[in-house]
Image (cartoon, rainbow, N blue to C red; front, top):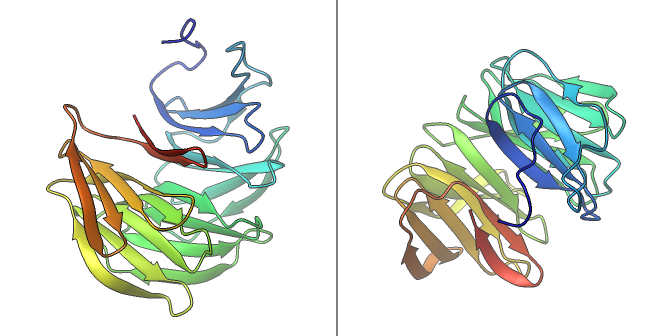
Amino acid sequence: MIGEPWVGHDVAVRCLDWSPNVLEIASGSEDGTIRRWNPDTGRQIAPPIKTSPGWVYAVKYSPQGDKFISSGDLDGAICVWSRDGKLLIKIKGHDSAVVSLCWSKDGAHIFSGSFDRTIRKWRAIDGKELVVLRGHTNAVRSLCLTPNERYIVSASNDYSIRIWDLTTNQAVGDVLWHDEQVLAVAMSPDGKYIVSGGLDKKIYVWNLEVVLDRHQVGVPCTSVFSYPFLMVLVV
């Protein structure tokens, strides 16, 4: 551990995200707040945002860093916030809590995964629902886009990873399987590899359809990140 723990939330922290310029970190908690932190000092840089009663399951900065999205509570809503904490738009459409989020690179679209077992694509400016993807049989816990944004990859509590072609809005290739719930999925910067981790204590590296490698760790894997200078970081 580097430095002292950052203290501010009242109960468990459920999600984290770096800003695109890596100058701040956003956290979402079971206390219903989003907090922004200076990663060098560990101090909060703005008053906390009170989202709604219930947990904050996911938080993601926009690619431009001018806003961020969050999800929480069981009403299935997605909130788009300005950096100063102003609610810009509240998007509704899911039938249950949203637990995974990602942006398109241009910030024009938001993708969400929910306990209602669907993946949805939204227009960010007005919250218009554009696409609903159905196929998972349990909550969609993690999402990532390929660099060319043709495909979105989803990981689910149904033990599976699915690849969706956004030009046809259909699942493609093989369904990829873990032995238990899949909690995290990430794409390599070159778009060749998918990395996944879950409650089965395994990390899988996939070449979209073919397993390239298979590793095991001693505890459940809950988060996977990919950076241009690293293939994968597991938490």
